[in-house]
Length: 115
Length: 115
Image (cartoon, rainbow over all chains, first blue to last red; front, side, top):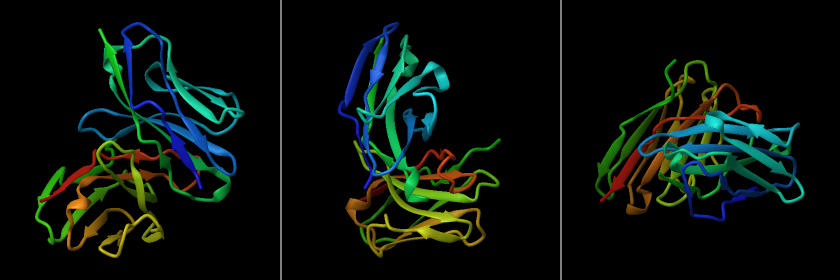
């Protein structure tokens, strides 16, 4: 079975500082990994995905994520945080080798960027 | 173009009542997914459709929950004899196919409150 862990409920960072939101995953086959962001009263918005290839994936709004197979991690990063980045972030995984399985989400990490 | 839309945005009902939640996917998207998001949790898979048929309904919690997609576009999630534990945000997503490589686009959700 697939699973995702987001070990931090809340991450606080000062505006202009780098940010990291952590995610680890577990799948039996090859992972297909996503990050989504959720603003208040809005649906989930796709940020980026990893399938294969370069371990560093670049996405929307200046975000990037690094796939690390040995650590089974897919941490979300941004070099310089903005107040407008404050939102709820979800990591999700799908097992590429298990056919059309649904996405499995982590419980989310609330990012607060302080001016 | 238009994204995924869901109606109503909010629904308040009494325990024991029947409710219907509607999802309008992105035009041309053949795959449609329903998720449920409880407070402080990530979305949890309920059911997905490829075209008109339910390809996987393993996430439906019990037989009070049912979903249809009769013409392969709009979908309705139906909940009978609602219980207070059904209170959550119900999210709908669509993708251009059920290929593992295609990201899902989410609607804003329907917040269901069962009193």
